[in-house]
Length: 249
Image (cartoon, rainbow, N blue to C red; front, side, top):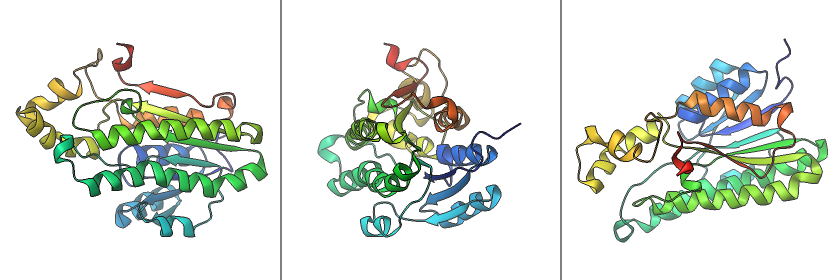
């Protein structure tokens, strides 16, 4: 059977763990050559070695470092991000700035670098791992909600500009995914909601979900794989919810 990404190349950010790792592994299994971009050098190198890809050790908030590399890939997956849970009056401005840099400016710079080669080939796939928080807001997450809403707008603009060049751009909008990023915020969620850590998942994270479980990284990877493949050429400017029914309310 032909691998659907045979001969394609992809950049996946935040690919040393969680959703990014699952996407990198799924793409490689379907024949893609994957650049595993992450700040965690050891973990990125391990994933790259496992899948026959390349590790790119990069702080994506370092604008100069990001702009030094010209990207010649068929697929860009903007996945890197982190969470910080605080009330607005207690939210550190430097952290707010860094989160927008990582989740908005870095995707812009990476896409800006990759588009010329995509346009030349007449093919490109931009896949932005957004969030249910790109469509809905939650208290105590001002930077994350702002960044993901901005990523939605960037994705749609890329879709409009890239359409005549064979480049699509879409967002994936998961609810809470069973990843280290989510596990790390449990204590902060418990603090701001004044509840035990043991109650956070059911009381806070899954409060709005008709399906009372978290999304798995492999679920997100399966959708990313379809968006990257040959059957999604007419899908662009879209946002795909994968949230257990949260946004159905």
